[in-house]
Length: 199
Image 1: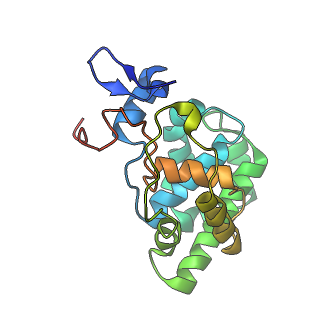
Image 2: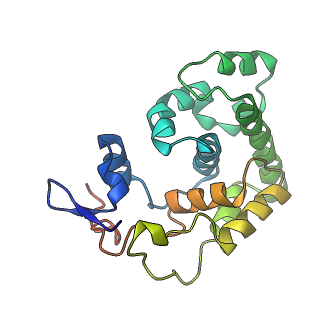
């Protein structure tokens, strides 16, 4: 599939056509740089929860996730114990998957350990060190987009070496796309160059 024109006359990646939620996410968030340890921890966590599900499910539940996980503050989440896990497993607003909940709590601890070793911004520096120095050619069709790359495999390996779990190459690449490390808007998408950033 190639870019699609919408009712406002702008050409967008075709997945942005599916729902108003996707359109807003496509226009305002996807592919824009995300920086900071807490923000990247949230994105990695939500991409892990998305595994096996549609991103739309996670997007619609994101406010509930943020409330349930204390804004993804790593200090708070790392301190979650059995009572918090029980609360999360009973919360219909989020994805109630015990393994993914446990991974998020574990990864909060891994983030704190990483920051303790390397200082504030350590996760930001680690993730962004895998941004390609030379962007690949702009994709023209959705079926040209990879599910993983050498860079995402390397990022996943670095995250695992730092103690993170539930971060395979596909989750890592989805994070790279969402957080602006790579620009996977299609070549003819009006939002590829960020010239509509005020929308």
